[in-house]
Length: 170
Image (tube, rainbow, N blue to C red; front, side):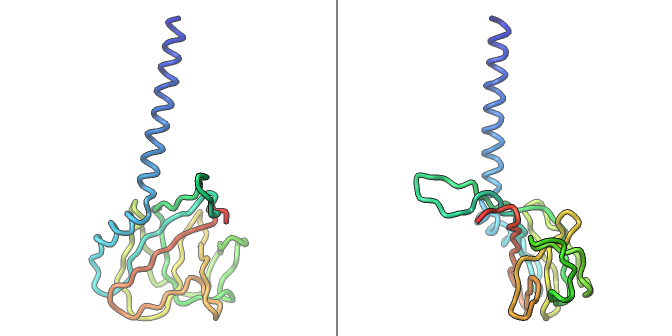
């Protein structure tokens, strides 16, 4: 009886611990609040800033009372700002927006903080901004000229949010 009560107590503690962890993860995945918080961190006067996030789960629209497993959470990653880069200047790794390399020059490399926040001073111009993910370059947005994750910076403080969606289902 003593061991059964001890086992029951451990099981209840484990379940409560899982619920607590789940709450903490979901709290950190309120991407709107993360964006608002990151906006208050901006100290640059002429450059880009933003948030890097990872979207994952089933992101298909649902009809209530159904729920979704889709979540978008900030992530700590390295981002690279390249000269404007097109498909023809990149070596694709697979069909999920990953590339082994670009033939263009790296302009800057930045670390995000634990909230996915980054910022950097930058001269006006058009760039390709990618996320380093598992040793590969990740870019999923394109323009009409084949540019990968293109960003045109015209001066001031420009918000550039980057979201990886390769773990999401639509």
